[in-house]
Amino acid sequence: MLAFRFKAVLQTINLSYLLLTMVCIFLGFSAVIANHGDVNGYLLIAACIAAFVGHVSLCTFHEYSDLKHTWAFKVNRDKHVGHPRARDQVNSAFLAGLVALIVSLLCGLFLVVKFGLGILPVGVIGLMILLSYSSVIKKHPIYSLLAPGFGFALLIALGTEYVLVGQYTQLVWVIAIIPFFLVNNLWLLNNYGNIKVSAEDNGSEGFPMAYGIKVSNYVYAVFATLATLIIIAYVVIGYLPVLSLIALIPMPLAFYALYGGIKFGQNITQQPKFLRSNLIATVATPALLGLTLILD
Image 1 (tube, rainbow, N blue to C red):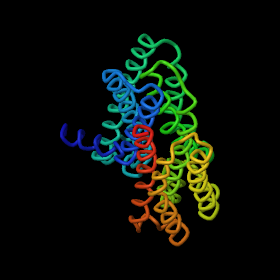
Image 2: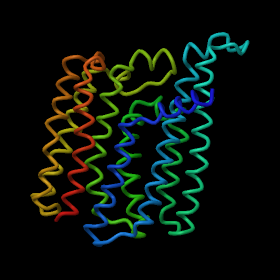
Image 3: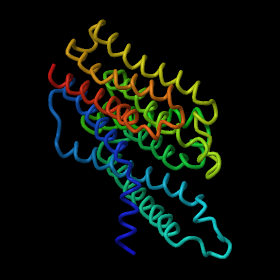
């Protein structure tokens, strides 16, 4: 039973979003290197731990919310004889999320004591997103569309920079907007196949379900185009080095994924090559961008 619970918890830690967590930490780290030239390794480890446990807590609580509404768990709920495997998954996800939340709060308390109240806004907003995601955010199409990019791209990059140097700089703000659009697109396309499931199982109303696949494709196209144009504009005005143009190399994969969304709609989950392309573009673009900041 314990082995199964551990496996169930591991399955809730979405690998693609864990990669995003690492990339957004790297982006904040890269901005610090570009501005200050050096970092404290122990502080970087502290930032990584705080971001990781926050990621685990969000994923496990989200999984708990989804699982507790499944048919297997709801069957004969009043008699407490739901499917034992489903009930075990629910309990495991809740316990793991609770432990991760407590660790997140302890990490936040440590960071506030160590670095002062400047880190508090990032922590409080992150906690609000975590606690309200299943009950509020995922039931509102606009909130659910923008929350992934805000939580991952902006908060993690900003928090990493503050932990490393004790301040927020303009560079992190302006470059974090690039993965903000890409992370939102990752969530958007991944949810095309969840339209009916969201409506029937947990009452959530994601953007694709609320506005349809066609509008979602338009939004995806706008976000991908903005991410591309922002990189080019930053290079043209001299805010980023010319070398940063290599961050555009993965972007055709984002438009390839858009083609899949247009062609297959909510059946895109049956065409994993498009979802993989979207993930690669989302992870590789900010990773290359951060690398150019270090190399410049």
